[in-house]
Image 1 (cartoon, helix red, strand yellow):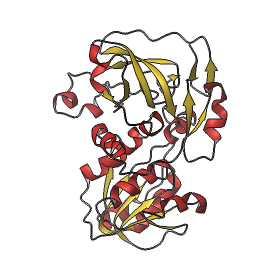
Image 2 (tube, one colour):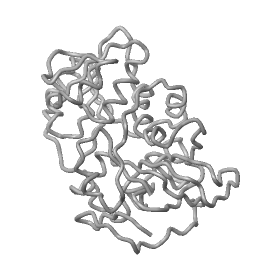
Image 3 (cartoon, helix red, strand yellow):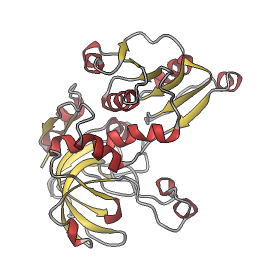
Length: 309
């Protein structure tokens, strides 16, 4: 089958990659309809996951071809990312996302979705309602990641929140935060991209001010110092960026100013699907490519790029 793999140093397109086999916890075979490029995929190529090799990608909409749950066959699905072992301390205490032996497509111990087919843990699949087009459902994973912030941090509607970044995830985050009336200010590099935030956030290319809550969704270690400087003493900094390499942080400033730092990644899929189904979030168009044209997708300046199969 066609697949885009990371071979430990670079992305490689193949047309002879073996079909996935069902077994263990993975008892559903998914035909990929559409997959999307995330900044994390680009960071994988830079060495973000130096112990990973295999099919890249983790954002997708697919159709179930085979499954131990017969009701799913023929249905479009999206899927949560973390498949736990079910036995370790984290799995037994409801923290499967942090299982010490978890599988994460395109990142850890599992082939991803930049391929024609993939096998999956049936328990992680979510049916896409018929009224949601595939081009909208593809945004479920990043929208779920945005929703996770409100699960972890209380943001009073009366207090302005800063979002660092002008990419796809920042776009989702700003809308989710603004949905309950919270004023949001987005700082980014691209005036063109920032225009798309105008309906629900104030924007600027020059970070300034101080905020009780700052959310870093830049995908860059260089922005961390600025995010810290925007966070008030005893305020909260939420980190949504994952990247290759290390960031330099003045930990003394964190201690002295008593800043709370919260890491956040994956989130709840059903609420994300509900928001999309009800039309409560604005979703940009996705620029689609054939898998063989992966370089164009990875270097595109479109708000979102991906693949069709």
